[in-house]
Picture (tube, rainbow, N blue to C red):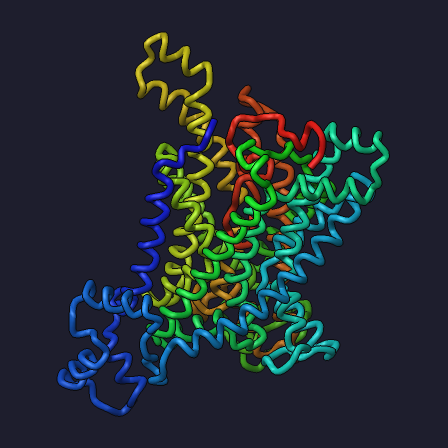
Length: 611
């Protein structure tokens, strides 16, 4: 069944317009007086009299209503005028361009690392026709960029001292940030291709080519040509992920890119600079998606563009059964042990102590027990993620019956990494656990709703519902007894699989200061606080880093086993199968490779002869 896209286009435009309008209205959405912010930035000693504030509003053009100011701002953006910084008093556009140039260089290097790693992961599958690279690739794809950046900083900068860990003064400063940003993306690309290749190599045209004497290299190239078109949209999402990951990576390594610029502007309430930086990041994400669509059309060519090209269902790639069992036991055990301790007890005489029986994971810079803060932080991190997951599920089930709305909203959500939404929410409502949860929730429900919409369409078109209608069953009976139960189960499993990814997204916002605030024992915040004394007490940074890595590993292993669950509901495999998609480090997901096109299945010329 074809995906209805009649309403998707207008919804896509409306969602994009809403995002841009939210950026333009930040001075009014922030809940603070912009004039007071500018006055404090210009002169901290000057008294905030009504006359002084009125003069600043007139100078900034804020003496008119929000809609008039939004119109002026939009016209200025179209003319290339992003306004003047409230803090420095300089034009915003040069700062945005300078940061964008640095970030584009970093993202290009990171994408090169990602492609190289993906080639290494895919090579064994091409050579042998089988391979176990998918499990390793899935683990790498689940590691958050900020976690990998912190580990790289600790190992290469502190312990080995082989590479610079801050600044942007030469090619050597590019290595660690590019690796931290590129490895998760490379794991994602490698996983997608490695999972799809074995099924493609079993297609009939491969045996035909071998029988005709074609070499292994030629068959491998043709198999890649066959695999890539349906996966290119996923590659575009990986590129979008680079824009979100760049914020944390640039913060860790003090890279003066557009992500760090946006974060600094949000914290200093320099809203014009923040508006320009967020627009640049949004443009990067949209450009990546458009480029992916263009590349896909070029790869398909005119002969295959309308053929409904799909991939065979990939074989499930699973780790050893002991992996989820061990991870599911170690993490709760550490959390339970930490819950028995006081996470807020400060002892300045016990600062930065090494692990001991009294403090199994050592102490932090204030003498607080790291194990206690790790255990209590799990309740904040995972508990908030569970609430976000439940809210996203309810919204998705409600909007799943509006396929056009769900599809259009999902397309825009895929271009907005959680960090970017977190920056906007923090600028409007201030940093905090509630703001971080809202930011993640805003981009968590659209993929679930798109999944529900696909299932609703297929269930409604099934033969048994046609028979129910013919027998006179009322619509409400069909909805509550057949459609909703058939949709709710798979979408709920999808939401549960996304729980670890949502927790990692919340931790990433806490790491860059947009989530929970001190002294809350949130995992991302713990990792950020430990960076100040990572050379003296690396164990304080390793504890939350290992916990986050275990959470990522648990997400990957449980998702792999859930995707391979046996049929229990009697529905066709394409209905009960993994439309659930992949759980990513950003908390988003997408349909799997074999369900990228919902068009009727045809035998294409690729399968009859060759790519």
